[in-house]
Image (spheres, helix red, strand yellow):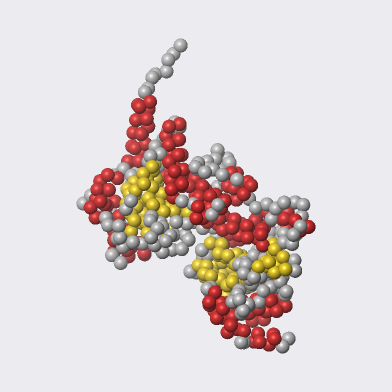
Amino acid sequence: MPELDLPRFPPGTDPGPSFVELLRRVAPDALPTWPSPAPTAGPPVTHGTTVLAIRHATGVVMAGDRRATAGMTIASRRIEKVFPADRHSGVAIAGAAGPAIEMVRLFQVQLSHYEKVEGEPLSLEGKANQLAQMVRANLPAAMQGLVVVPLFAGWDTRRERGRVFSFDALGGKYEETDFQASGSGGIHARNWIKASWTEDLAGDDAVDLAIRALFAAADEDAATGGPDLVRGIFPTVATIGADGYQALGDDEVAARAERLLSGPERGGRRA
Amino acid sequence: MTMPFYVSPEQVMKDRADYARKGIARGRSLVALECADGVLIVAENPSRTLNKISEVYDRIAFAGVGKYNEFQSLKIGGVRLADLKGYQYSPEDVTANSLANAYAQTLGQVFTHEMKPYEVEILVAQVGAEPDEPNELFHILYDGTLVDEHGFTVLGGRAESIAEQLGRDYRPDLPLADALRLGARVLAEEGGEPLPAGQLEVALLDRARPERAFRRIRGAELESLLAGG
């Protein structure tokens, strides 16, 4: 770790605006890498489960449940899976929690580093491509079962609309037209969203839809945490629009969740 | 056998310092002021794209005067050092103090060991995160001399006369608009009209902003603040 010296590079080896390249040059041990042979043979790996992103008329909503599992055990009731990536985008993670959280941390620095070195932020598409590269770099770990499948969403300041991207374990990047959900409960969440998503969905309704879709996923999927009224644990919800990334406060999510619980979801109790 | 001419070390250092000072004096000046809203940095810079003021870390800004390519590469070095430290330790461990020391080391090394000294003066400013946490202003000269300033600091060729003018009118708790107008006035020729928005590059380390405090003030906001809004 260079403590006092500014990092300087001979011509031809300058890492440019990429923080990952910089780390590779000066502190390769700090890059997230995972040991082989497969750690899946050891203690159970902590997994984060359902996250989703919904595009609406004035931006996007991202949300995730709060449960992490390790095998059949609940590893955490309060894990956060939705993070700001920078001022106008967010990233939500599903899959192996350790590598995923490291990936988010590196991704956040990568974006702000680029912005500071270059003097202007990456385009939204450029950010999504950067994340795809990080997922791809995780491929050896993915082959050992440490799969990370993030969702990326943000406000495209040039096109002035919200956009949603999903990724597969190999680093493939796919732009979603309207919404996407990922993780073990993703399929249930996606079906729930599909039933009520419309092109002119308002931001406020999209937040409710996101919370309801997570309830639906928690109903069907053991690894997805539902609203915990006893402990007061509710999903993480963030909105991203022209004015940037905003995490909804716990109180607001709690109020919305409690209102929704007295709505159609009551039917779930009889099912 | 030919003998190289003897030049005393004093003379070498003096020549280098004169060279660097001349380069810096050709450029336009820059002021940084602590104000009620945080730390305001005002530079005379007609270019919209070649910046003298930049964000280095969440609560730290960098500014340079003199030779553009030299302070630009120093800026990038600072961003790299800060991000490496923040990533490997924690964002809280990145301080203006350690960054200013790194700059002083580098500039000192270049001044004594390389053919040509850097023709730059730089500023590392940090705004406090908590209401009672003080700001920090570090002014670093071309030879690595590091000065810890309070209230305000001036970089560039006309530093002395600008500092004298600032000293008369500066108060530590100036509102943002007043601090900005003061900056625009002292950067202009003495007794002349304050510099207009088109000649200024302005950035604020905004105390009230969580996490990334740095923001540029430009366009309509700059015009209205200068006009007295």
